[in-house]
Amino acid sequence: ASTLPIRTVGRMSDPFEFTRPDPDPWVAPEPGGALDVSRLHPDTRSLRLNKMSVPRGELAKLPRLRRLFIRTLQGTELDLTGCTALEMLVIDGASKLQRIDGADSLTGLTDLRIASCPALEEVPDLSLATGLRKVSLGSLVSAPSIGPAVQSPALEKIELRNEVPLPAGVIESIRDLPNLRVFSWTGSKKVPHALPALVETIVGRPRYESSSAEQTLAASAVPSMGEDPSV
Image (cartoon, rainbow, N blue to C red; front, top):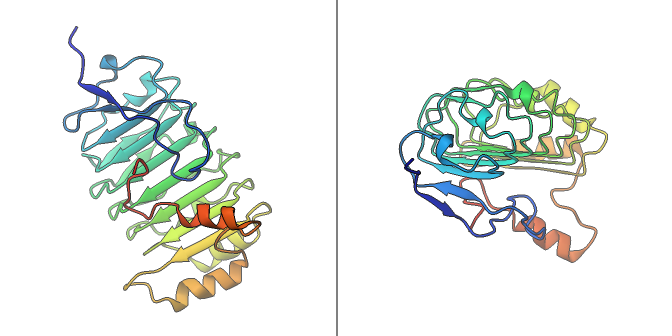
């Protein structure tokens, strides 16, 4: 059987942890077209998709998939049903994406990053992802609230950028997260600096970890929304 052109993207760093070794090489099909996992190794654990559509149920055929990076998704829906092994999810620049289904399967998720998805109607409800530690969200103008994605009592770091829906009740719930160590909100021309600054004051957590100069430097190196974590 013919196989989809595949390239291994070295040892791409986790977008949240630049100093941790990457045990799994990233598999990256050539951009364009629809994902067909029958042309991938069934034990694929780290998958990077660029300018591709993802048919419903396709990702569930990769039972060991731990990390998924999607840039410029082609389509209005993303089905994550059955992705029970997924630990890291990055969705960037999916301008047409309206729905993310199957979030209740993501019980093992620890890192989430969603950026530049202006049509997304709701952020995924991650109430069952009780081990979720890091969340980075930005440029979400259609969703009514980020609350469903920031419920985990295990959350240690929340990073917000540009326009995000942050109702008052959600601000207080973030403030009361028992393990939250780092919180930041970087505004834009459409989000005056005073608003993120006020929210940061209410939440009362530092923007970066400051236990050492090295930790501060590492935190400042986290790629901005829209950057490729492989760079």
